[in-house]
Length: 204
Image 1 (tube, rainbow, N blue to C red):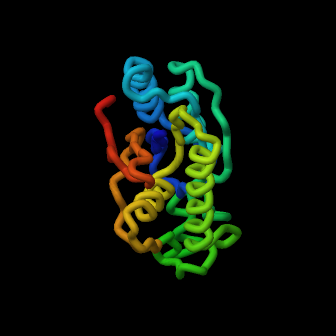
Image 2: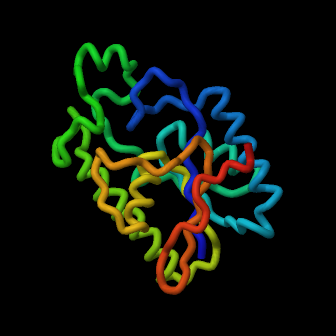
Protein backbone atom coordinates (compact mmCIF):
# COMPACT_ATOMS: atom_id res chain seq x y z
CA UNK A 1 0.00 0.00 0.00
CA UNK A 2 1.81 3.06 -1.29
CA UNK A 3 0.93 6.71 -1.90
CA UNK A 4 3.05 8.77 -4.29
CA UNK A 5 2.89 12.53 -3.98
CA UNK A 6 3.98 14.54 -7.01
CA UNK A 7 4.35 18.29 -7.21
CA UNK A 8 3.13 19.87 -10.44
CA UNK A 9 5.56 20.96 -13.17
CA UNK A 10 6.99 24.45 -13.56
CA UNK A 11 4.66 27.36 -14.22
CA UNK A 12 5.37 30.99 -15.07
CA UNK A 13 7.04 33.00 -12.32
CA UNK A 14 5.95 36.54 -11.59
CA UNK A 15 2.44 35.61 -10.45
CA UNK A 16 0.96 34.63 -7.11
CA UNK A 17 0.15 30.93 -7.02
CA UNK A 18 -2.30 29.53 -4.49
CA UNK A 19 -5.63 29.03 -6.24
CA UNK A 20 -4.34 30.52 -9.50
CA UNK A 21 -5.69 28.72 -12.55
CA UNK A 22 -2.61 29.45 -14.65
CA UNK A 23 -1.25 26.29 -16.25
CA UNK A 24 2.22 24.94 -16.88
CA UNK A 25 4.84 26.67 -18.99
CA UNK A 26 6.85 24.82 -21.65
CA UNK A 27 9.42 23.62 -19.11
CA UNK A 28 6.62 22.28 -16.91
CA UNK A 29 5.15 20.29 -19.78
CA UNK A 30 8.58 18.82 -20.60
CA UNK A 31 9.16 17.85 -16.97
CA UNK A 32 5.75 16.21 -16.74
CA UNK A 33 6.23 14.38 -20.02
CA UNK A 34 9.55 12.99 -18.79
CA UNK A 35 7.92 11.81 -15.58
CA UNK A 36 5.13 10.15 -17.55
CA UNK A 37 7.62 8.29 -19.73
CA UNK A 38 9.65 7.26 -16.70
CA UNK A 39 6.61 5.92 -14.87
CA UNK A 40 5.45 4.03 -17.95
CA UNK A 41 8.84 2.34 -18.23
CA UNK A 42 9.03 1.45 -14.53
CA UNK A 43 5.41 1.18 -13.40
CA UNK A 44 4.73 -2.59 -13.65
CA UNK A 45 7.76 -3.59 -11.61
CA UNK A 46 8.49 -0.58 -9.40
CA UNK A 47 5.53 1.75 -8.89
CA UNK A 48 2.42 -0.32 -9.69
CA UNK A 49 0.27 2.82 -9.75
CA UNK A 50 -3.35 2.08 -10.57
CA UNK A 51 -5.01 5.31 -9.53
CA UNK A 52 -4.26 9.01 -10.13
CA UNK A 53 -5.81 11.74 -7.98
CA UNK A 54 -5.11 15.37 -8.87
CA UNK A 55 -5.74 18.81 -7.48
CA UNK A 56 -8.19 20.50 -9.83
CA UNK A 57 -6.00 23.60 -10.25
CA UNK A 58 -4.80 23.83 -13.84
CA UNK A 59 -1.05 23.46 -13.24
CA UNK A 60 -1.69 20.19 -11.38
CA UNK A 61 -4.18 18.95 -13.97
CA UNK A 62 -1.74 19.72 -16.80
CA UNK A 63 0.86 17.62 -14.97
CA UNK A 64 -1.56 14.78 -14.26
CA UNK A 65 -2.74 14.74 -17.87
CA UNK A 66 0.83 14.33 -19.12
CA UNK A 67 1.39 11.45 -16.71
CA UNK A 68 -1.97 9.82 -17.43
CA UNK A 69 -1.50 9.74 -21.21
CA UNK A 70 1.55 7.49 -20.76
CA UNK A 71 -0.05 5.31 -18.10
CA UNK A 72 -3.52 5.00 -19.62
CA UNK A 73 -5.26 5.85 -16.36
CA UNK A 74 -8.22 8.16 -15.62
CA UNK A 75 -7.72 11.22 -13.43
CA UNK A 76 -9.82 11.83 -10.32
CA UNK A 77 -10.07 15.59 -9.83
CA UNK A 78 -10.30 16.90 -6.29
CA UNK A 79 -10.42 20.40 -4.83
CA UNK A 80 -9.28 18.95 -1.49
CA UNK A 81 -5.68 18.73 -2.74
CA UNK A 82 -5.44 22.38 -3.83
CA UNK A 83 -2.70 24.72 -2.63
CA UNK A 84 -3.66 27.31 0.00
CA UNK A 85 -6.59 29.54 -0.97
CA UNK A 86 -5.02 32.97 -1.40
CA UNK A 87 -8.31 34.58 -2.35
CA UNK A 88 -8.37 37.70 -4.48
CA UNK A 89 -4.64 37.67 -5.26
CA UNK A 90 -4.66 34.19 -6.88
CA UNK A 91 -2.92 34.44 -10.25
CA UNK A 92 -2.28 38.17 -9.85
CA UNK A 93 1.13 39.56 -10.95
CA UNK A 94 3.49 40.15 -8.02
CA UNK A 95 3.84 43.82 -8.94
CA UNK A 96 0.10 44.43 -8.69
CA UNK A 97 -0.18 42.52 -5.40
CA UNK A 98 2.67 44.58 -3.95
CA UNK A 99 0.84 47.78 -4.94
CA UNK A 100 -2.59 46.80 -3.69
CA UNK A 101 -1.67 44.56 -0.74
CA UNK A 102 1.84 45.62 0.33
CA UNK A 103 3.54 43.04 2.53
CA UNK A 104 0.90 40.36 1.99
CA UNK A 105 2.58 36.97 1.87
CA UNK A 106 1.67 33.56 3.25
CA UNK A 107 4.37 33.83 5.91
CA UNK A 108 3.13 37.29 6.95
CA UNK A 109 -0.30 36.01 8.02
CA UNK A 110 -1.17 35.03 11.56
CA UNK A 111 -2.21 31.37 11.79
CA UNK A 112 -5.92 32.27 11.99
CA UNK A 113 -5.71 35.30 9.68
CA UNK A 114 -7.36 34.73 6.32
CA UNK A 115 -6.20 35.96 2.95
CA UNK A 116 -8.69 38.54 1.59
CA UNK A 117 -11.37 36.27 0.15
CA UNK A 118 -9.35 33.17 1.04
CA UNK A 119 -8.37 30.89 3.90
CA UNK A 120 -6.00 31.15 6.82
CA UNK A 121 -2.86 29.03 7.32
CA UNK A 122 -4.77 27.10 9.99
CA UNK A 123 -7.64 26.49 7.55
CA UNK A 124 -5.14 25.21 4.99
CA UNK A 125 -3.43 22.86 7.43
CA UNK A 126 -6.75 21.51 8.71
CA UNK A 127 -7.96 20.83 5.15
CA UNK A 128 -4.82 18.97 4.11
CA UNK A 129 -4.63 17.01 7.35
CA UNK A 130 -8.24 15.87 6.84
CA UNK A 131 -7.61 15.04 3.18
CA UNK A 132 -4.53 12.99 4.00
CA UNK A 133 -6.22 11.14 6.85
CA UNK A 134 -9.18 10.35 4.63
CA UNK A 135 -6.94 8.98 1.88
CA UNK A 136 -5.02 6.81 4.34
CA UNK A 137 -8.24 5.49 5.90
CA UNK A 138 -9.68 4.80 2.47
CA UNK A 139 -6.63 2.83 1.40
CA UNK A 140 -6.61 0.86 4.65
CA UNK A 141 -10.30 0.33 5.42
CA UNK A 142 -11.16 -0.82 1.91
CA UNK A 143 -8.02 -2.93 1.83
CA UNK A 144 -6.90 -1.29 -1.39
CA UNK A 145 -3.96 -3.14 -2.81
CA UNK A 146 -3.35 -0.67 -5.62
CA UNK A 147 -0.95 2.22 -5.23
CA UNK A 148 -2.22 5.75 -5.71
CA UNK A 149 -0.51 8.88 -7.07
CA UNK A 150 -1.60 12.32 -5.86
CA UNK A 151 -0.60 15.23 -8.08
CA UNK A 152 -0.64 18.34 -5.93
CA UNK A 153 1.41 21.33 -4.74
CA UNK A 154 4.52 22.12 -2.75
CA UNK A 155 2.68 23.55 0.23
CA UNK A 156 0.47 20.48 0.45
CA UNK A 157 3.40 18.08 0.33
CA UNK A 158 5.21 20.11 3.00
CA UNK A 159 2.27 19.71 5.39
CA UNK A 160 2.23 15.93 4.79
CA UNK A 161 5.93 15.82 5.67
CA UNK A 162 5.29 17.62 8.94
CA UNK A 163 2.38 15.32 9.79
CA UNK A 164 4.30 12.09 9.17
CA UNK A 165 7.49 13.26 10.83
CA UNK A 166 5.57 14.44 13.90
CA UNK A 167 6.65 18.05 13.51
CA UNK A 168 4.66 21.15 14.36
CA UNK A 169 3.67 23.07 11.24
CA UNK A 170 3.09 26.81 10.90
CA UNK A 171 3.18 29.09 7.86
CA UNK A 172 6.68 30.07 8.95
CA UNK A 173 8.03 26.51 9.25
CA UNK A 174 11.01 25.52 7.16
CA UNK A 175 9.86 23.69 4.04
CA UNK A 176 10.92 20.22 3.00
CA UNK A 177 12.26 20.04 -0.57
CA UNK A 178 9.52 19.53 -3.17
CA UNK A 179 10.86 20.25 -6.66
CA UNK A 180 8.69 20.49 -9.75
CA UNK A 181 7.52 16.98 -10.77
CA UNK A 182 9.54 15.36 -7.97
CA UNK A 183 7.88 12.29 -6.48
CA UNK A 184 7.71 11.33 -2.82
CA UNK A 185 6.86 7.78 -1.71
CA UNK A 186 4.75 7.15 1.41
CA UNK A 187 4.36 3.52 2.49
CA UNK A 188 2.39 1.72 5.17
CA UNK A 189 5.02 -0.14 7.21
CA UNK A 190 4.60 -1.82 10.60
CA UNK A 191 1.24 -0.20 11.20
CA UNK A 192 2.11 3.35 10.23
CA UNK A 193 2.60 5.58 7.21
CA UNK A 194 6.10 6.93 6.55
CA UNK A 195 8.15 8.49 3.79
CA UNK A 196 10.49 5.99 2.14
CA UNK A 197 11.62 8.17 -0.80
CA UNK A 198 11.87 11.96 -0.78
CA UNK A 199 11.99 14.50 -3.61
CA UNK A 200 13.01 12.01 -6.30
CA UNK A 201 14.06 13.55 -9.64
CA UNK A 202 15.74 10.70 -11.48
CA UNK A 203 13.32 11.10 -14.39
CA UNK A 204 14.82 14.50 -15.32
